[in-house]
Image (cartoon, rainbow, N blue to C red):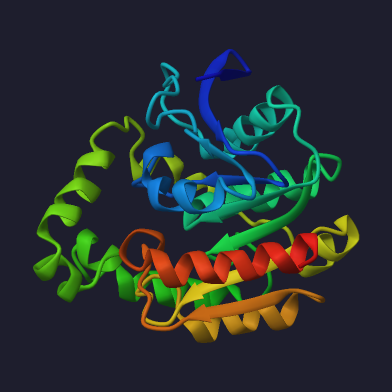
Length: 257
């Protein structure tokens, strides 16, 4: 599979299927492999690009560690290497912050951004304290309980084990990539850039609550929001059928039914 070069870093990615492009950007515990249930579904109608940000999966780790402020450049390099224009870029959790930044900075490559389980780092005085409060509440829980429901962990032990194992292929650590949360784009910045924004939230997400997602949706003119019923933070993994259906609706909104 191909690699792109971003500031001397080797960025691994995969491309599956043909059609309008959607790039999938993982969160802090993932890499390209987490999207297996999305690739199998969407490659029939879309070009599905899965990316390893540097420090994750098969991409290189720079000597000084992973710098999240460089993640948007990783994504841009992949889109350029794959000769993609008009893409929808989905970012899950912290990956949504990088997805938002690359969308605003590269309108020729990115048509829309799909922040999933995240508000994409939007900076607004009404929104910022809500995001902070959600995260503080989530950090009271063990990491696995923030990501997957207790019921899933008990009933799907093998898939829970695999979920954890995929993370062992990553070198980056959360403390290295926190700087991506520095003040991001304002709603006015997003409006000026002209990118479409389609939020997808989980009804029982412990990291980003639906009321917080609702505020982000209200602040971003022209955005859409779908709250996936009964879905946790890692809904792409735990609830793939209803997550894929929600994502497909977002893509049809972006590209036309």
